[in-house]
Length: 221
Ligand SMILES: [Fe+2]
Ligand SMILES: [Fe+2]
Image 1: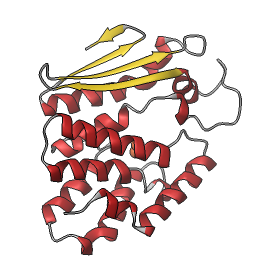
Image 2 (image 1 turned 180 degrees about the vertical axis):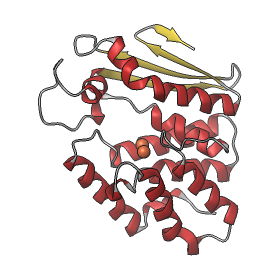
Image 3 (image 1 turned 45 degrees about the vertical axis):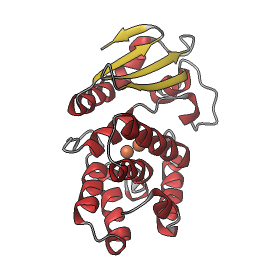
Image 4 (image 1 turned 180 degrees about the horizontal axis):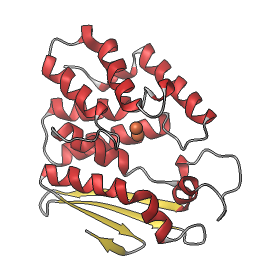
């Protein structure tokens, strides 16, 4: 069984993430580097544990969270494929479990909007953990954020609190975001994140859960 520890110790994985950080900095994107992948990996593992997936599935969730964006340095548009292929090439000889490898590859390859397709609990969890990472600390621009800034920067910067929780008894997954309305308004948020939230809902449905989004005490479910 592959482990997150083994994946993190792989020098190629570390280099792919470093190169992706450089590439996305150069094109002015929000963080998809170590801050983001560690958050997604931790959140994916906790979610898998909270809903009662097996030890191996929990580990796979942590791994896909860590590796899903490592192919960005080869081009943003198809980064989900690049990340998946890089994973396969790096770990093909380190596992003798074809199903484990294929499940990880499929989850990574389908985490982005064009190809998004949920066919396993691991892929559903990656989508929830990835799409829910909306927070001020994702913004990398050195410029001051104001109402004229890029909408992605503005909305992320305005998100001052992000709480993600699971209630197994009530079968509910909840994302609570606090937005500083001096920097953005709810309409900006919906413009950017409506698609993300639709994917979270699809992923929660797959797991047999409701998805509830609460923005500044405004509840959507
Ligand atoms: Fe991605
Ligand atoms: Fe991501």
